[in-house]
Length: 236
Image 1 (spheres, rainbow, N blue to C red):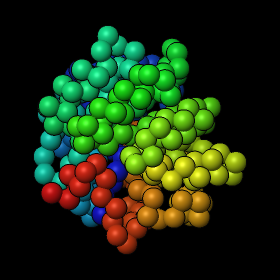
Image 2: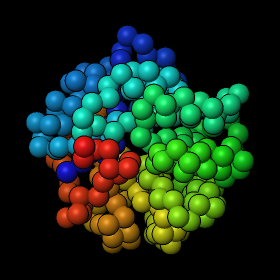
Image 3: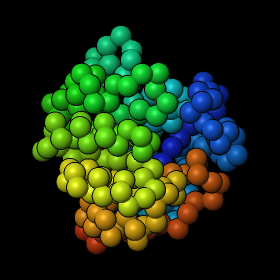
Image 4: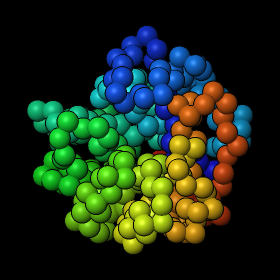
């Protein structure tokens, strides 16, 4: 099985985005280095891993993430959507080896996800064959739906089930067929609730380790098919 949401941090090069780490510097509570994180993952019997850019610790500098490319590991990078040329930044990451793009819209200084920037980034993801992965709070679910509706043939991973906490929010997400949430330890909804709304075939499981806690959680196999995210990179 695959852990579809892990973070790794190089503590020597942390550039703290304090407003993006409301629970504090989680990377100081447990060894967040890639080798240590992946050892815990493999000890738990998980064969594949998706490393997601830790924006709170490293911002949009994906150099540490990229340095940990290895068999059985997919990399989800991130670019500054409000930077001078986010599409060019995406191209640079793809050329360097990322498998997915994290569209991180939490606490942004201004909306961008459903506008020209978000659409341009997803269009380039489609062209370059990398998977878009969206991280939003419930107040941007409508923007997520608008973006996903513009690319109906593209599957979007949705971090933490968009932190949806009630049936109304879950119903809106579930109705958009190309949204494929990742259920994590940080998601407000239980795995059983997510399966009821989306079905196992649309879901992936991610531990959110080590951000969520020092102990690696019990892995959850949501689908007998073992859904392979990010272009099948994880199973190679």
